[in-house]
Image 1 (spheres, rainbow, N blue to C red):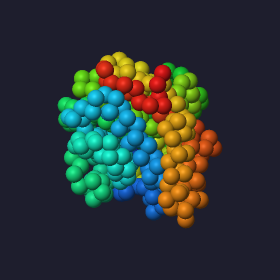
Image 2 (cartoon, rainbow, N blue to C red; image 1 turned 180 degrees about the horizontal axis):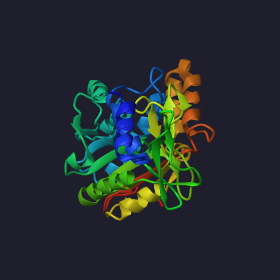
Image 3 (tube, rainbow, N blue to C red; image 1 turned 90 degrees about the vertical axis):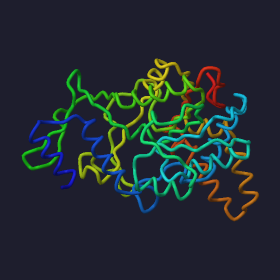
Image 4 (tube, rainbow, N blue to C red; image 1 turned 90 degrees about the horizontal axis):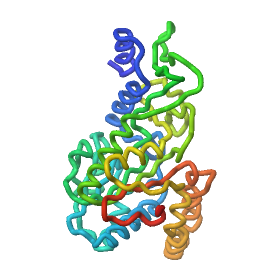
Length: 326
């Protein structure tokens, strides 16, 4: 039975379901059955655009690990690591800095686990944050929170999903939408508890807003094009903008320090992506144009630079991540 049929049967038996239930079921099926990345997939993430992205994250983690005293028990960890491209690039820099810790990946997709294992055969896989070792974490979550389920509200009424007489999915109400996400808050709290207890730092990168955005941000992407989010559940990627203020509040409630929020472009420029781009171009003159194009795509305001935000969480006694100091 297709997921569309399963959800229609559920709605027929129990009535309209929440946007969070629809989104959670759709993304669970979607990620369990395919590699969604790259030109043959549905979307491209920053690590797939150029190695500079992962390298600069690795440099930021190496710097904070060094300033924390280079604890030997620290481990690298990542939530939803895609093909492990980011992890591979970041670890290359971390290893050069002397980091020799284990690699732990939180991934539930068997398809993506297979790809990650090919690139990082030493990786240890986990189902959730609670399974990670009790050790200082050098953590990355890139485009992870946006895929966690959201709830939508119109006034005090929860917006739900029904089936029309024509057999299509539709919302139960329309109007001025407010979004919330208990799933994101719980994940941020779980991460914060580990960092507060064991030390470390987590870099969170996603598209979203710092404070105050309202409205319907649920969207679907299929074949690198936007699609109707209620069409073909399980066959397209569903995401929504991340409320970084809510993540920070959730993390602080569990003992972690949350940094300021800044744009991806501002952060990468502060970390030195310009110098890295010039160094790579000097070594590979034939790639100069593609390197410059990648930098623009990652940093320019009309590309990923402004929409994508960056925030870090730190454990007690750990320094703040460079470029995100309050």
